[in-house]
Length: 341
Ligand code: F6P
Image 1: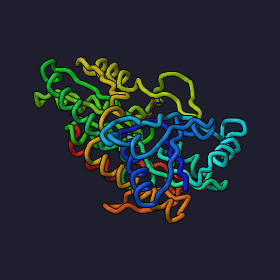
Image 2: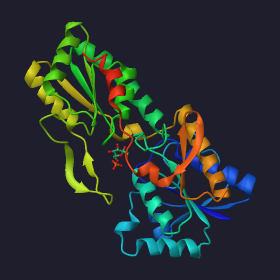
Image 3: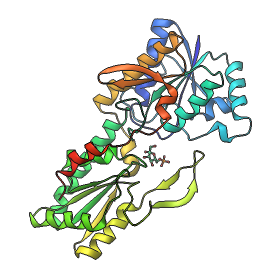
Image 4: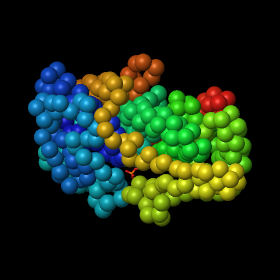
């Protein structure tokens, strides 16, 4: 069998660990050959490949990013995109695909599966917002990066008696903000799922200052004020219709300064959260996902995504992963709220 592998969407730490596990088990246990497709769905669309074998996947376990490259190419937005992918797969003798991606990449995989392409999905995203899996790999690494930043910001905020705002990623789901805010002892955590009141945030800021401590506010890029809108960088859309976010932290700093008279500054963590080496947790999760994905292919169990359920790796229908986003629930947010102010 010849298996194609691709990584699509925003990169995240652990992608290389998946690729390595897929190839290692596929070659050693099943005698498969592999073709690496470059830059997400652009690879099979344009026939862009690289060699994937035991030697090209050596030493990549701790490396961030993806040796295959990534893109946000949407074949359903390109004329004859699906036909071109099918033709290229047939020409190259590809029997099945392992698609490693988030909402968008796996959304394309779901549609291709229904059109007869044999595909197994692996859930990736630092946002942890894919449905039907307890965790996606990459999330733990980004939370740890954010917590390190928060720890550092605490000491400088105290020295200067400032409020410091940390803007983290999270377009629709506030998982990174929630976990890093709890672990970092934030004065409040603002997430896209719950519209926030600027006055309430100012109260929490004042109360933290009263206890002679400086407030750290963790805010997800997609958080929305009660009487405002999501703040975007510009109006351009990518091929999946997403706007570029960022700016809500800066906006909130202005509001806090105006309403409390206290100095407030913002640090936007941005792509730092996506770069560099994966944590041990993400290396193990990504490795297990890769091993189970290639076994699903071997079993002919296509149209599935590997998923973490408790401590076990399960197989779930691909469409269930992207049918809806996994959002922070009110009970989890309530746990964090105990520490606000
Ligand atoms: O999809 C994950 C994500 O990290 C989002 O939280 C964020 O909005 C987006 O990627 C930004 O990605 P890029 O800058 O690569 O378009």
